[in-house]
Amino acid sequence: MHQIPNPRVSHCFGWHGFHLTSDDRFAGTSGESSSYKHGLFDRTIIGIELILGNGEVVWASAAHHRDLFFTAAGSCGSLGVITLLKLELIDAKDYVELEYVPVKSTNEAVEQFRCYQEDDSVEYMDGIMYSMNSGVVMLGRLTNKSTHRIQRFDRATDAWFYMHAEDMLKHVDGKGATYKEEIPIRSYLFRYDRGVFWSGLRAFKYFVTPFNRLTRFLLDPLMYSRTMVHALHRSGLASRTIIQDYSVPYDAAEEFVKWTDERTGIWPLWLCPVKSAPLDERSFSQGNNIKDDILLDVGIWDMGPDDARAFIKLNRDFETKVAELGGMKCLYAHAYYTEQEFWDIYDEKRYMEVRRRYHAESLPSVYDKVKVDLQGVAGGVRVDRRESWQEWAHQQFWSTWPMGGLYGVASATKGLFFESDFLLKK
Image 1 (cartoon, rainbow, N blue to C red):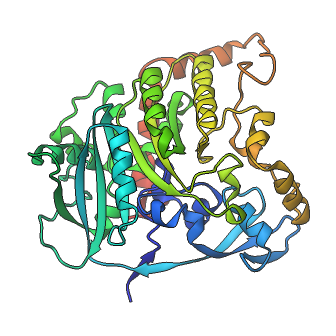
Image 2 (cartoon, rainbow, N blue to C red):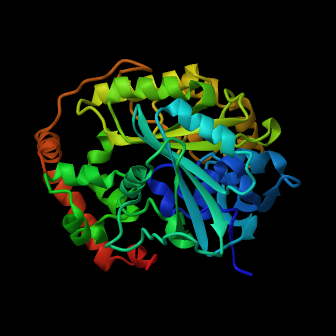
């Protein structure tokens, strides 16, 4: 019988989500449009095989090495090397019937999520806010029949999904009306891959390139998440790019989105409800602050301030606001906490006990893996030193437009055509 993971390969948080292996998603933080029903990706894992720091191989699950199993989830591979996972599966169908529901505010989007999260026919649910007063909630139902228009998003001639979703609002010509279409299951699961949500638009703006159907078609090979993320990191621009997912309680969603708009003016924003795990089965990355049964993930992806210290402060302000609202941030992305702030949120005692018990103390800790240099903005005094002329020349190269971007594109193009890992998907 044809089956799919429960159905966990639909869009995942952040740019990296499309091409991660299952162990990456378990050890990191990964969720998508069925997470309102099933929770984060680690909730669909029945058991894992790990190689511990002393070379021992163990099988961990809710029944065996329970503490290791739940602490390893979301701990960024800091407890051992995962070599095997056992996943739950559900029956697949040919299409997703996607219903587009227009909303005029984040609060209205939340009300739609509340309404449909108890509807057993709905398997997928997420949304996009294009501004404070314009957005769309999308409801997906698995089906083997096509009774509406069939739409795909995996061909160079197809629209990018977020633009198509906004266009669908034009088909709604009355209060309470919605629009439906069928999407082949694979095309739905990877609907945000081309254009990397809407982040591909930033590349067109950076290179001052016209953004239209023709240019998107011609540049399509470069517009997939794996290639674009590779180019971003090789270009050096990642150091000032905001790539974050923050989850806040439903009741705080409108306040958080408004705060985000006032501080950054970033649009669109991605909305994705996520079901919390029971207290005794929560992954490490959910931390100690979560009290609600379901949270709303808000995906924020765009360029931040050019000044490094201003960029760090903005990210720290986001972390402070989310903690104030009783939410969490996803640890797939850089964390700007001081070490004390980090361990005030995450269970240090439990984590360190598991590290000792399972011989992981020689591995980098999860904080070591996600932290950044705060450059004196917090956590100590910034130490300035005289830079060498080689360092000065290096800095000038990467900060001069468009040198970094051109290098990133050249590196990604080389990988696209000559490195085997880029060809695995095809």
